[in-house]
Length: 66
Image (tube, rainbow, N blue to C red):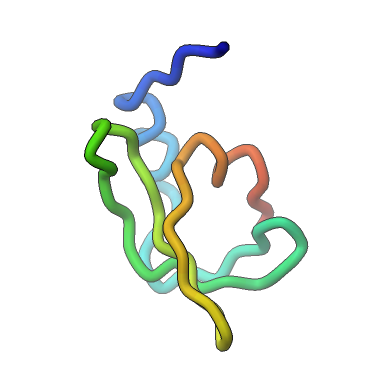
């Protein structure tokens, strides 16, 4: 299993600002906010017309396009 560096993930998220639209796994979402999980890992809250959810920064960065 790969070790995740929470600090690096926070830095990698800096270019994704709340209010920006992104393509995540082929669907368009609005970045509602950036946050930190209880584990200390960075995360983002994504939202579209029908759903809202939290995804870890590591998973988000691996699947995002603009």
